[in-house]
Image (cartoon, rainbow, N blue to C red):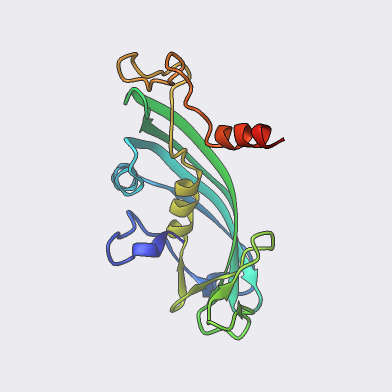
Length: 191
């Protein structure tokens, strides 16, 4: 999840959800980030700005002591074009479906190899995320979803490098001889 550098990078906002609230029935949650939260999220995700950030989620019980969070995350962001550095607007709309279990739950079925490394099936379903205490921070899931959906190299449709910065493709120079050309000539001489 987003919390890979939890000590270094605090999440820009939080929406704790008490798991006990969804122990017997589903709970609908709407998240609308305010201006300060959007500004902090822009800095956290290293984008120019976040104009809107919302999520419509359904939180339901999962495997006795866990929860499942399913819904849609939306954001309007502005990034810098990687070529011109001009503002470039982007719309993000992502479906989210995640499960959470208490970190001490016996229901985790994680597999480890002989070295103690976690074995993950890239084509299989996502494993539940562990949580500590009695709450899950739903904002962490929302921020992670947006972060993963951001184009890492945004580029305006007709953006091009100026001629003086464009790389020379070497088409005017003579082509460098192939390292195998000598072997080809050697083979022809030996026949």
